[in-house]
Figure 1: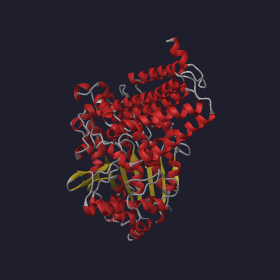
Figure 2: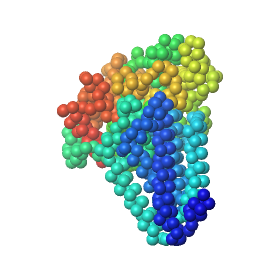
Figure 3: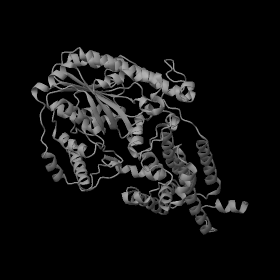
Figure 4: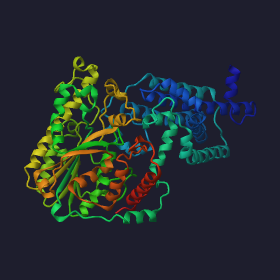
Length: 618
């Protein structure tokens, strides 16, 4: 043993046992990189608690492409930092920190919000503290195991690996080689959609669930593949001139002079109707909370939005409503939207959010989308309510301010606001308000009852504030149409524990399961003055559709034709009211993952025109 240790600690320039030491170094560093990659796969396999983690992990080992694409990054990283620092321990530490850091974020993000860690989330690094702050991170055995692996790996590299290369030529050649390999692999392997298809691994997952598809491919690999979404990627077959010609076929139609009523849109944070779940619809306390909402639905046009998101990612629904885009890039400059259309029609455009403007970069994005003025915590609401208090009780204040703001403006307005109250997570301790559910009456555990009761107390306040708003709007002589909708289903326990207790399997291969997971309510209500001005009743079933069609439904109810792109979107909705980011559609055949024939051609035409409209700016 002493002789082996002496051999390993010989300086690199020593000729004695030089070949053996280099071979040992090559095997050890590559092996350590593979171990880091395997550990990241353990995190991926155990991230989504509803899956069989052991079976999923074995599937990684049985799939050569998945194994290669997840182990290659930590191996290349450990060699790169070894060449840069001349120290094996530094190479291991750097590779471990980067790879397992991503794995940990993905692990907790899925456990807390059922949402994988994507490259696009890197843009929200500043918001991460605000997003995670209220959640409880469970330090599981795996986290402690990873810490033990880190310590063991550092000890191994410090005592059993020879000192690094000294020659700058060898180090430079090695470092540059690693960088070239990483660049080539990133472009040719990790961003390649054909290879992504080769890694299909659906034996132990539901192929309709985006989070399950993500973890089925490991951790480092699907994260790197998600970098594709950071770059503007035109749809297949995109031709800018053809898209421009296509959009020109649909000229904008103005809002008739006598029918320019004001529009107030409000997106309600994490708002859903819990009576839609069979296990709760018969609970008297839950029915009591939603009774005023159901009454308002009967006096409105109402239905369900089939959103792209679950328990987070709120701006996806928000921006789909404001732009009409079924999918979009980041907004970094003035971008055509329905807000701009209202503004071009002479409407005043403004809105409110009693949260920080830097969150999701709304302070800039809202300007890019056409809002003239927007109130946030920094420039208005901070004087009225503390940001932490706004999480639990700000909807009543917001509705009062919106009504007051509308009264102060002359002429037609387009107002759009986003609530902050009811943002998850919801406490696991007993509520200080009304206990709508009890373990004895519901069959749920005490923890699940507490989570739902805390959520329901917030929802009850929200619905009360909406009631007050509609009463105030009804009293106005000015015609106003109100649009209310939820952005996504609420968080309900780590790993969706409460939904599991409710018996919800979220089978996304069926429309019922898909709706249970993605659907949120919307309603379009009008005061008497608006009904008279537009000569419409604003009653009935509006149907279920993607958020990108909600503004179009509003225009239809008002009797407006709208901008040219909306006319194209109206035809797209006639083909399928569901245009989902996971390429899911709702046709006469039910829920399908592809369109055929002329429908497929029209969909591609729609995507190309949508992309052109977004990219051309204002």
